Image 1 (spheres, rainbow, N blue to C red):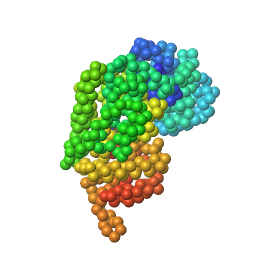
Image 2 (cartoon, protein in one colour):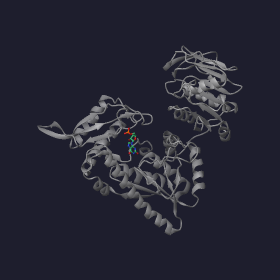
Image 3 (spheres, rainbow, N blue to C red):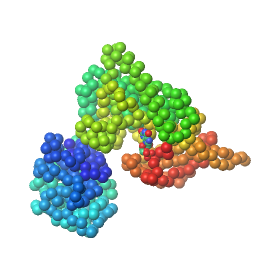
Length: 517
Ligand code: XMP
C-alpha cells in the first residue's frame, strides 16, 4: 500500500481517497508509527499529511526520523512538507507571510520528475502560517509563491518530495496530477487497484474466514449493508441469509426496492419482518425526539433478535449453525475509532438503529477498507439496482425523526407522499449529485392558516432541508434553483392533503444539524 501518515485535521482521509482515485491502494496510519512498523508494512510509497500545528511548537506531532531513511518514496504535504524540511536539515520559520486559500504558484524550471508537465503557473490551495525558508541540502526547489520561497522541493536520488500546497483539495487545479506524478512517475507505482480486484480479494478473504459456516446479515435498505451482503453472497452463496426489518418508518418504495429489485439482482435469501404495527404501537403518544430514538432502537433490537433466534435455531437443526454476522463498517469508521489496519477497538457501526453488543457472532466486514464512493462503485460492479447504490444517507430511525411531534400512521403516509415528490423532482432536475441528502420534515405540531378555493385551511408545514456536504460533519444548505423549489412547493401543496405550506431550511451545520430531531 501507500501509507498516508495522519498529522491531524481532516486531510489524511481526503489524501487517501485521492491516492485511490489514482488506482493505488492507500491506508491511513497515525504519525506515531515507527520506522520498524513502516518497514514491516512494506509500503510502495508514503504521503505525509497536512495538520493544524507548527513544527517548532513544543508538543507538535513528530515523525520517527528513521522513516525518511527507509528508501521508501515519500511525499510531504503542507505540515508534512515542513516536518520533512526540518528533519532533513532545512529551515522552517514563521515569516509573517500567512497564505490561506487559492494562491498562485510558479514553477522554477521544468519541474523535474515530480512536477514535470505542470503549467509554469498554477492556482493551488494553501493553508499555512509557517514556511520552509531554506530547502535541505541536496534538494531542488521546484516552485515558489509570493509568500513562500520554497513551495515545493525534490530529491530524486532519495525519492523525497514535498509541496507546501494541498494537492488533495479540489481548489488546487492541478492537484490530482501532482499526486499522480508522485505516485506513478517519481515512486513508480502502477495504477492497477480497482473495484474489480477489490471484489475478488474480498471474496477470497470471506471464503477463508467463513468456510462452510452460515452467515447472517441485516439489510437496512441503504447502500452499505446492501453491498456488504452482496459481496458475501458472491463469496458463499446460500450460506448467507438476510433479515430486513420493515419498521414502517421507511420511505415510499424502499421495501419493494429491497424485496424485489435487490433480491432479483443478487439472488439473496431474504427474510422480511413486518413490524410496522409493533413500532407504531410503541411510538404512540411520544413526541420527545430522544425518546422516539430510544424506542425505535429498542424495538429494532427486539425484532432483529427474534428473527435471529428463529434463523439460528433453524440452521442449528440443519447441522450448519450460523456463526457469522455481516457488518457494513466503512474505512472512515475504522480510522476514526483508531482501528487502523488492526482489528482491535472498532466502534460497532451500523445503519439500522443499534444492534446488540453481545451478539454471539464473529463479524464479517467486507467494506472495512473502503470509502463510501468505492462502496458505490463496487455495488455497481456487482449489478445492484441504481436506486440502492446511489441512495443518499438516510438515518436508521427513518421518518420517525422527521415528524416533529407524535408519529402516527396517517402522518407517516403524508410525509412519505411529500418526500417522494421531493426526491422525484430533485432527480428530474438533475440535482442528485449536488445534494448530500435532503431530509423532508413534517411539522406535525404546527398548524398555519392557508386558503384553498373559497375556504380557509388549517394545515401543517413541510420543511425542505437540502444540504451539500463531504462527510455530514459539516454541511451547507444547497442553493436549489427557484423554479425547482416552486415546482416542489406547488406539487406538495396540491397533492398532499393536510399540507398547506412548504418552507426551506437555510441553516448551515454547524449550528444546525442535518436532521431536525
Ligand atoms: P445530523 O442530524 O447529526 O446528521 O447532522 C448527520 C448524518 O447522520 C444521519 N443520522 C443518522 N444516521 N442513525 C443513522 O444511521 C441515526 O440515528 C442518525 N441520526 C442522524 C443524518 O441523516 C446525517 O446524514
